[in-house]
Length: 189
Image 1 (tube, rainbow, N blue to C red):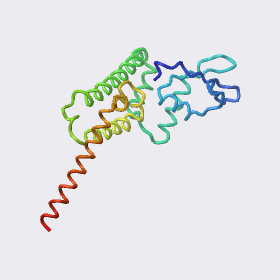
Image 2: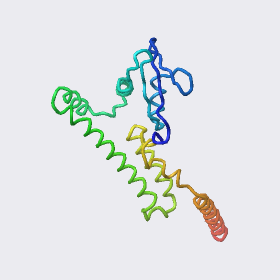
Image 3: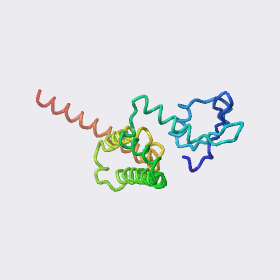
Image 4: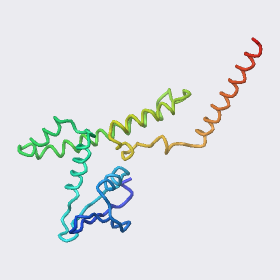
């Protein structure tokens, strides 16, 4: 996660090419978006002037995704953002957006935690498959960001030998059920 790794420094050369200082190779905007999705913090600086260009490139990544039809930001939100640049609300909007995203992350984290720890349905056969579907749905609804937020992937982190035993137990129960069905069929026949 971004908390445990240092910020990835990307340098922009005069040719506008982006250079990853960790791997010593050139990267694209899509590569940078991937780093961010993986939980890395990224800083993009102009090699010559030293100017921080991170905000400019992040906005460009968002614009490209929106331009490809990956509409995460509703038109009304985009319109309100443009309006906020010309009003006194421009000082409040960044704080409001940050708090909103923090609440979304926290809510998702708590929901995932509740699904795994406090839910009485967790003992029900097939619950893990249903939970995986819900996680996939959340990931799709949040544009793939769920893997980067606290609590995301909690299901994978909390796997223990007991869970694999449960899977084996389920297989054993299925096998016994199949054997019972065969015996019943033999009795009828």
